[in-house]
Amino acid sequence: QVQLVESGGGLVQAGSTLTLSCTASRRTTSNNGMGWFRQAPGKEREFVASISWNGASTAYTDSVKDRFTISRDNAKSTLYLQMTNLKPEDTAVYSCAAALRSYGGRSTADYRYWGQGTQVTVSS
Image (cartoon, rainbow, N blue to C red; front, top):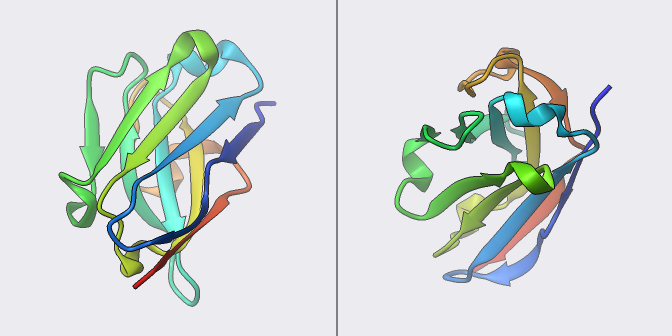
């Protein structure tokens, strides 16, 4: 069993920068793709970004391209999401997930392990 714990969320103003972290309980996730998803109140969970096991390949949903950067440090078993120029529509609970394969995907079905999530609130 792999446990994922997110941190770094908070309440910020529009235009601010936040960096989320996701730490895995075991280094076995270094062989897995990882991803970030978010869920706003009353909405479905949506894909935000994914990264392959070695960080060589990344993908983003269109609304965060050029603003968010996903990265990982396998030595620390930690996944990151740097979020710049935050907008009120980015307000959501952000969760990290470990994929079934060596690369991440855009569907929740591509992931096996999930963190509890961290709240990000962006005020206008």
